Amino acid sequence: MKSRKDLKRERRTPGQKSLAIKKQLPLLSMMIPGAVLVFMFSYMPIFGIILAFKKINLRQGILGSPWCGLNNFSYLFKSNDLWIMLRNTIGYNLLFIVLNVILGVALAIALSLMRQKLASKTYQTIFVMPHFLSMIIISYIVLAFLNMENGFVNKIILPLFGKPAINWYVDEKPWPFILVFVYYWKEIGFGCIIYLASIAGIDTQLYEAAAIDGATVRQQIFNITLPMLRTIIAIQVTLAIGTILGGDFGLFYQVPMDSGALSDVTTTIPVYVYKNIANGGASSLGAASATAFIQSVVGCILVIATNLAVSKIDSDSALF
Amino acid sequence: MKAGKKANIVLHIIFILMTIACLFPLLLVLSISLSSSKSIMDYGYSIIPKEFSLEAYKYILSTPITIVRAYGVTIFNTVVGTALSTLIIGLFSYPLSRPDFKFKSVFTYYILITMLFSGGTVSWYIVCSNVFHLSNTIWAMILPYLMNAWFVIIMRTFFKTNVPYSIIESGQLDGANEYIIFFKLVLPISLPGIATIALFQALIYWNDWWLPIMFIVKPELYNLQFLLQRMMQNIQQINENAKYMSSASDQLMNIPSDGARMALCIIAMGPILFVYPFFQKYFIQGLTVGSVKG
Image 1 (tube, rainbow over the protein chains, first blue to last red):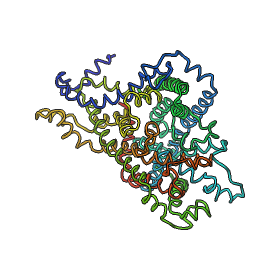
Image 2: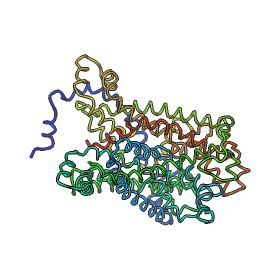
Image 3: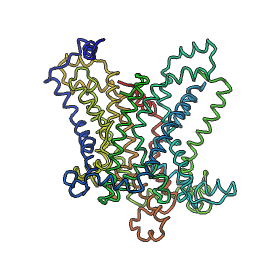
Image 4: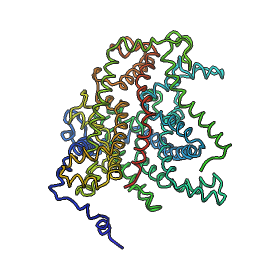
């Protein structure tokens, strides 16, 4: 067995010897603006995570605020909010992770099966389009359908079935379905692109050989396409699991128009954190920073753990 | 592998239904914006304008200066933000792609750590507002998005696979310094990668409402998306509490007709939907390059 160092040395070809330190300086100087920005907007907030253990006072800033031990956490755990938002966040995100793979792969395979290439491209262009609309725009589109007085559903669709109008932004029951539907209306086309590209990269000889052996299209999908997509699926899932305590703030805040009556089914962690920041009081900021702390730590652990699990099962599919 | 003839027809039917589902909501918004306010009052929203009228657009273009200004803010943020971030990301990721760069792995980890671990929204907000004093400045809507770890990885991979090392070597032999090599030799053959990053960033800046929601209070700094968001919030408050209407001092928030609001929506999404099909291949390229491990 060769050690990693040996392999590295072998890989390096003669022309690629490291430059002398002095010659590295111009390259290093190129990285200064980017490195400074990353430090400002990523590393400083990472140091700022100590805020979770402080009684936040906006005037005194991060370093000046007094320590308060685990007070923020006990405040958070005592409130009822934590369990509701954990249920919502994890529930929606688990559903999204599973459906993203199933629907994304299914749509990608279906698009790749089209006999007419141009038609397939055109459909793809149309399906991807909603991804590029902001959540604000989406919330207006949803409003066009669900508006109480003039909305398309209340004015046109419900009367067709002889049903009375519904005050959509007050009734929480349909919202889990509405939110999931809106999410897939927006993201399904974009989500399938990555699988579509992987399918395009599969060697066509595999299919030709299988066809000669008499394999049906269905057999080819299950025995060639899906196994070949294994790596990309594993990577997508690993990345998604890292954000299981996060998710799309706009979907849960803008689309239901921040309606208080719906908060039981729309309060996810990002929504809770934002509302507490907007509130601005010391205890709400404390609760928000404790939540954010849990979110960051758990997210990081989950990615590493998932990656470890994936690499145990199939080392090629691991992210790092 | 292709579907059989029958299956192909089934696929077409499914996809045509999906196409309708995709386009119908957009057409509904367009139709509302083109309906007269009287017909909206009488018949509600409909997919074909009952009474065609351009009054909503006329209203938007004529009265409140705030809308024009919000458009200006959005365009400024998009142009400046995209140009700066493309340059900074390009400059940062190029050395990472150079096999002879000593600090390659140090800086790769430097950027990877930020993808794995973040400080969370609260400390990010307090750092931006208390340490950098970004609240109510135009830079609050530009600086935080300038660097993006994901795009750095995409660009590094792009440079690595598309720029032959021999080109860089030939530049070194001719005595060119690193900046000349980058701008004169490397950039011209990396334009597709640069375009991908620029397009993604332009979209992020154009569609952004998150930074204004966090940092902007002054109405003259509202961008288009944030203006739409504030209008929406106002409608909601008016719906929930009729008393609020009289106290809403800011007249721009009370854009009267539904049509005008939807027209503003069309104006905000129009440029994207118009431009996007031409650049689709860059978006797809960016996604697929980024997914390559390494």
